[in-house]
Image 1 (spheres, one colour):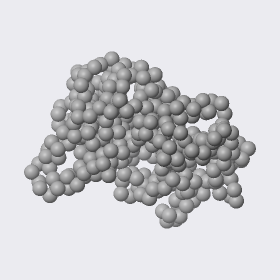
Image 2 (cartoon, rainbow, N blue to C red):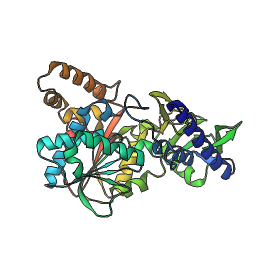
Image 3 (cartoon, one colour):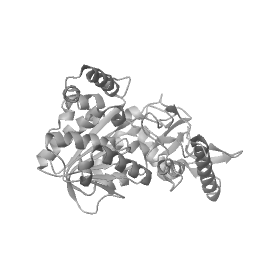
Image 4 (cartoon, rainbow, N blue to C red):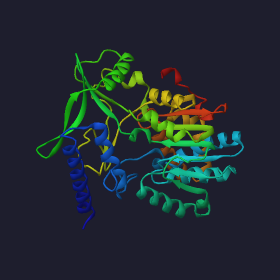
Length: 385
């Protein structure tokens, strides 16, 4: 069986599973539940399968896949926090290919700031094995410091929590604004295919969306968007073990006032399949990533509810510049002009507004500590939240 045949079979099984779920639910499934199953259904969801997801051979590219410079700069920020704590751990949520973990550990080793433990909270067994293999190949002498978790640790710890491009993969609820009512968008089946179907929203959703609309200009009839109902509980759960330290959220997204602009009338859903982007969550079931832009105002609210203080918010470009990405280029190149030229190209992808520099944001939240963080010294966008 070829890879394409295996992928088609996998997608057919995932499609059949979601079809049975919709039928069992009476012919209509809330989109939040559909997205949850499409991404995380055991053995069938996108993040449960064995296909390559990240990098040139995958479906999309994250900042750590673009360049080691990203991880090196994050390591500099981690070192600053660990130094203030005089020790501590790092916990990364959803470590992807393992490249960010390896880049951070390699850079911290240079500075003599290795954490007591580097924990990876990873729910995908497939990705966990890929991470282990990558770290064993690249940093075998540091593998003993790395521990994998099925969920947040029960014991409290001091240190840093990292979540790079994790929030965008939390399932979202989708709504359609009407002049005299609100519809919740769900998924039904027509001629054997998945299709959007609307139902009158429950009072709980109506209250939430009315609060969102209060921060925006008037929406036209038919305006569609989304929000993440589970973000508050999720952030509470993953950050609860942090007794002292900092959380760094990095993802593509916007403050709420910009997220729900009237002209963004189709929402922010984005799907990736073999580096092709679309807004169709019903294609390539089980084989494509489904995500939504992050409402960073909601992240700030949820973090504060979890007992954290929001201390900084900036663009990825300003975050990396503040941490000395230019210095990291020289350090990595070691006088090699060809390598420096390649690193310069990678840095442009990370920094330029038309690439990742402005679309991606970084937020810092702290608990029981108060130190200036170098990654946020050049720009603070908290006033936009």
